[in-house]
Image 1 (tube, rainbow, N blue to C red):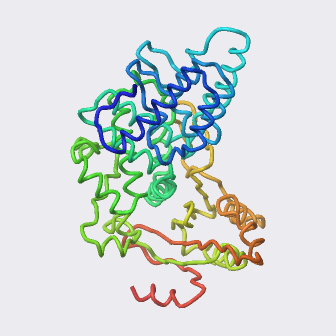
Image 2 (image 1 turned 120 degrees about the horizontal axis):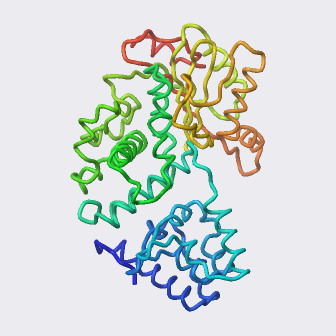
Length: 421
């Protein structure tokens, strides 16, 4: 039976499906597993990969105990990223799931497949890896400290993080660029990315980093009403008051906006902190208008815009550019930027380095945008008989408060409006 430290209708629903899947795995009932998984969407069962029975066994442990590749495929198909962190959790016997695979030649191949597909990912600065670390950390804390970390709150936050935190990561990167502390972003995340996913290796300093960066990333990512839930539901859990006195971190949790009108007029200055940062231009453009994008970026690359950040956002993804001394740096949180030994990072922004003095500059910029927003696919769909599937992109230029406004091609009347500010 699933163990749980706080019963709610939501956790009862998740525990119920957990028990059904575990029973089918123990009975080696492949047909039942196939039937169950046809109707299970992990988004509807937050935290399912991390739930454990009274012996500390997760679904990953039970999958490995069967050594049955077909049943593993039914459960893990299209869910590998969501289940991968749970393959590092140890049960009451100090065993990871892979340690539970039975002996034998066939089982050895099964074990190799698990290692290759679910445990072989190299640590990186990609948001998939970082979010996996975040979620496993929170699930560990919920399991070991139920008095401080409620299961329902942890599951809610993990479920939200599964949708991505690209705007939060891009915002932290952009802020470190504006502060001219180019090693700050990789240094902040290095120890979290390098964590070996062992609970016993969560030292106090690493816990503080987890708490700080989960807090900061979510505060920059989520809409105010979601942050308000953190405060209302678990004021003393997320996150420790100790963070307010941590000298190693300059980014603190954003206070929730107090009124409905604040939430409806959500602006990046409020999100980043209007006392420190200013938005200098705000442009909406269709992603299939490649020529307008080229015009905007060719106009942006000029001396007046040195040390400015561009936040580029669509409904599905966010990325950022930073112009610095004839170089345009591009940050995409989905990129597998590698960790460097001992955290010795060069004094330049983490990201793709585009030399703006070269003729290939504009092609590289469009390639970066293509990688994020699939511009060519959008353009190809413009004549779709079902109507154009146009992706709207929002490009916001950011700088420190009080800095001289840059020069931007607004492609409309917005330039005059911003010049009046």
